Length: 283
Image (cartoon, rainbow, N blue to C red; front, top):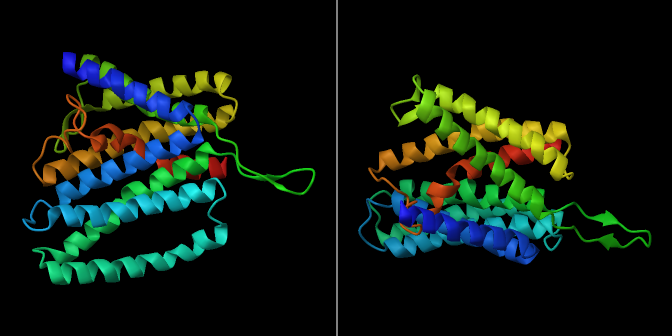
């Protein structure tokens, strides 16, 4: 318990410092998180390989980080929209490169490995890249006709994290006290429907409070985001649990003593990110 508390304290310091120190520390923080999550995922997915594992993990992690940087660069107007749209050609090139890699490395499950490399981009690179799009206000034209670069809004990022964390805390408190009906016992024996509903209520309440404190989003947007957090948090956690069960491990990594790895800490948040972005485009 003491180790978990110490880790949680320093984890919170790093997160708050990275988010609030400025836009470049924010971009660096989530770039590191993207890399760490991809590295852990590939460590799980490549367990059947006994040769060149570190090389495979590296060559699967780098494209995930590049995908994140591409979307982040677009959010701060370094990468133009045209280049972002044309980057789709990267995917067949990546497939060709990874296929040649597996051809010469003699993997036991070459196409499964290639699928794992693509998964790291879809699972981490793109969602965290979409977070940068949410964190920056879109560029505008000034009175002189010049483009005003996007502003960075750290409260948005912390607010989105708080929705997920509040849902998790609420689900634990209500579930541990009143939980009787299992949500999906095959994957997560401790999750209950009572806890799930309790977490949703907590998330909606914190969203209501955030609407007064963080004016970047309207009340309707905050409520919609809280519903995404309530649904996505549980699904993200269950999906990561399914992944870990499939490879028979308890934690995705050991970077955070007492808490597991980065993927263990961000699984729920990652799953919510594309839906956060989608909701904000619609409302």
